Amino acid sequence: MAYLFVGEGREYLLEAGERLETDLGILQVPDDVDAGETVETHLGTEFVARALRGPDLFHHFERTGAPMMPRDIGLVMGHTGVKQGDRVLDAGTGTGVLAASLGRAGATVVTYEQDPEFAEVARENMELAGIADTVDVTAGDVTEEIDELAGEFDLITLDTADAPAVVEHAPELLTPGGFLAVYSPFVEATSEVVKTARDAGLEEVESLETIQREMDVGERGTRPSTAGVGHTGYLTFARNPV
Image (tube, rainbow, N blue to C red; front, side, top):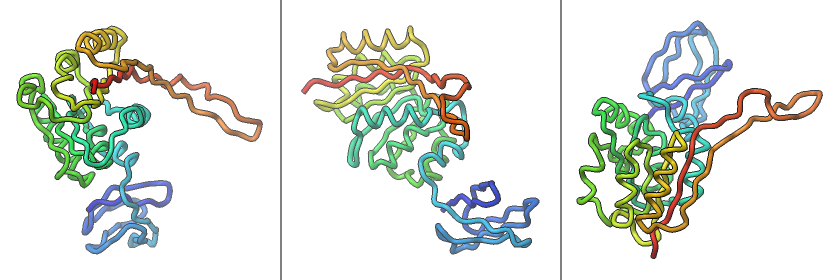
């Protein structure tokens, strides 16, 4: 099992028994280390073992592209109410941050990634997250297997250019009352997803632009940050009729 070792404003992702050489000394992780324990380098610098949480996975997963941002993941989970025992079809795995978040919430996830090398990285990331047994990373095109998947899922999550091709089959893929969530980077793609969802007979179709702005808190007062507004993309949600 891997832990984050935090100290001196740094953090290192290490497994039990691993050895790391730093300018603060050699950090030798005990074989029986547990979360909350303190480990010293040979120069006496202390690092505390911390169990991995969702935000840590976002920062420490091996990346094969830009991962879905935490705020977008939060909207997906909040708008669909994904829960333990749900069955999820995910396409466009990429780094696997969304699939991992859904799996750690207790859902069983089948996620499709077209690039075999990316899929292998995602499998390794699921191992790191401790959910390799509940998140099945499949190397392939989900549109080629739709007929075999029909009627199995409580939630579909898509982050792919060909999302509309899956959306038009959503009524057959989803259980009654099941949800669809589609991430789109562009307005044009969002419009096509919305039209396809409506034509397919899905209900409660809505699209949201995701924007987040940080606040600067200082001695003189608090105000919105002058840094750029944090736009990421567009999320479309819909629901299968009962």
